[in-house]
Length: 83
View 1 (spheres, rainbow, N blue to C red):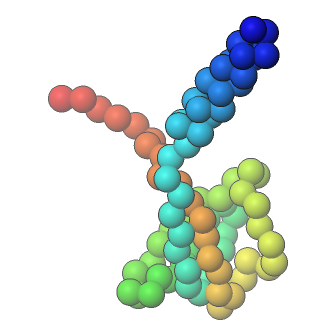
View 2 (view 1 turned 90 degrees about the vertical axis):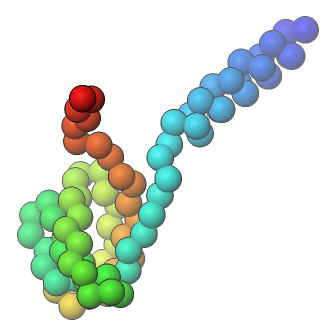
């Protein structure tokens, strides 16, 4: 009985942890600019994307202009206004 209860509790925590994560997207292209906490990347359609980075952003390699990168990102609301 205790084993079943423990299993149910663990499944409940695991389900909420996975359900709360937003979808992950990616963009690939050359770095046009890298300044402080922003990277500007040109996507395959020629659009310039400004993407913020912070201390939690994992990075491998030198983020310098011209380097080709693939950035994984999630959308996050800065504010929401209901009218």
